[in-house]
Image 1 (spheres, rainbow, N blue to C red):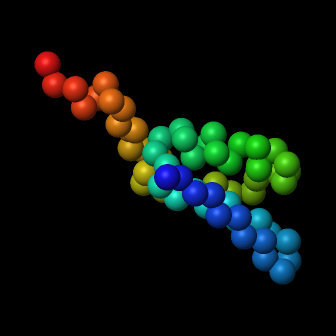
Image 2 (cartoon, rainbow, N blue to C red):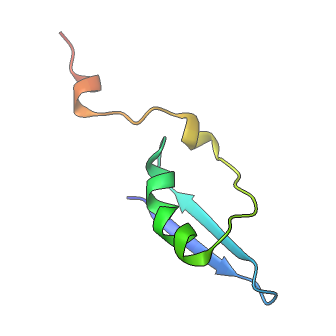
Length: 62
């Protein structure tokens, strides 16, 4: 299950972190938050971003 953590520092700096998401799923989860909060200063991609999400189709063997 994916989770989104939002941290707001005392200076107002916002950090959004996505846990347990692969590929573009993290962008999908944060899109609305980023639009509501305004300009994104920096975006660090975790290794999970570059993983291909496994689907039921991928696990079938012929």
